[in-house]
Image (cartoon, rainbow, N blue to C red; front, side, top):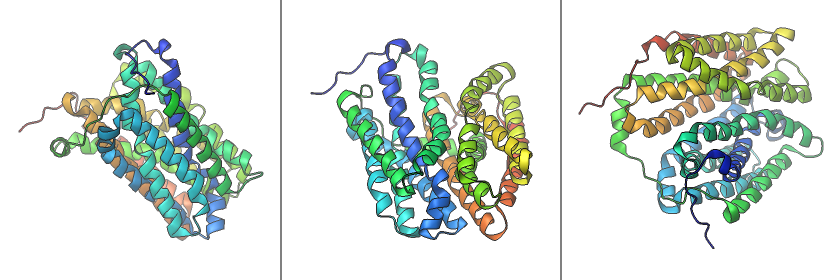
Amino acid sequence: MRNQALEPGPVRQRLGPLLFLAGIFYLIFVGRVSLAPLLPNLEHDLGLTHAQAGGLFLAMAVGYIVAIFGSGLVSQRLTHRGTVLLCALLVGSVLLIAPFLARGRWSMNVVCLIIGLSAGLYLPSGMAALTSFVRPGDWGKAIAVHELAPSGAMVSAPLIAELLLDGLSWRGVLALVGAATLLLGLAYARWGRGGEIPGHSPNPAALASLLKLPAIWLMILFFALAIGASLGIYTMLPLYLVSEKGLDQGWTNLLVGLSRLPGLAMAFVAGWAHDRFGPRASLMTIMGITGLATLGLGLGSGGWLVASVMLQPTVAVCFFPVGFAALSGAAPAQLRGVALSLCTSLSFVLGGGLLPTFIGWMGEHFSFGAGVVVFGLLVLAGAALTPLLPRGAPQITK
């Protein structure tokens, strides 16, 4: 028996469906980022070099961008609710089975590609499902709750890995996360609500119109730097701290997990800063401090290194509330949804895929720290470009 669609209502009356969606988003994100704290174990077990280990995230990013652009074709046939369900079942199944099939570099790359393809289906349909049962006046509060999922995943993934590694291999950890995702997906099939409407397939004409706007390319650059500073650095940080800085793996995973805790609150501070000072001043400040803190990660040692590990993600996460608002101002109103998909997907390949590969290559041929320093300088250069952002949304000219 199919669930009846929910009418939009206040967020306090829709907490059940909202938390259901956030829980699925959380486990999907844990599945994506769990490789980071497991990377030293995985690298040793599969005989990977540092560059090859970093390349796993590039394979995942490629799958993710393909899925983002193709998600409309899937949701057009399955509805948004069906796409969320498919995503949870695919991610859970891949994490449950594939780690035991991965025996080397290429098979593990295929696993990561499939994880990216599966996980990339979620966000467009998850957001559509959320906004289908929450009234527009409460979308901000509902999205704030929903967005706790990725931050919570980045906090808990290293802690989960460290806890489970006492009795399991890296394969067992991924399989356990996969089993939990699969079970929650099956529960969503029975009790999940929202998104009982079909999606829309991509519009090439809209993409072409957006790519003519210089501000869109600027926002792609900013988002790539922000995703690199948050997710890209995060994926390689445990391997860097263990292999090059000589930190204990247990202490490293605890430190990396705790470093993400302040970000849960800082996103709200960034939203206030945007309203008070505007996007350009806020982005310049956030990216400038993030760049300096990233330099501290690459150059620091001892107490300075620990301080940089704690400060860098706290500031980097502030970009996203301001960045999404600035992106809304960089695109015409009728194309803002397309701009979001375009900007985040391309930026994810650059910041979440190519950056870990680059840092891994630098760790193999020079040092991890040198790779982090180069990226920190790029973030500082990006901060200098923020005055080029337009003050109002442009109009598409034919």
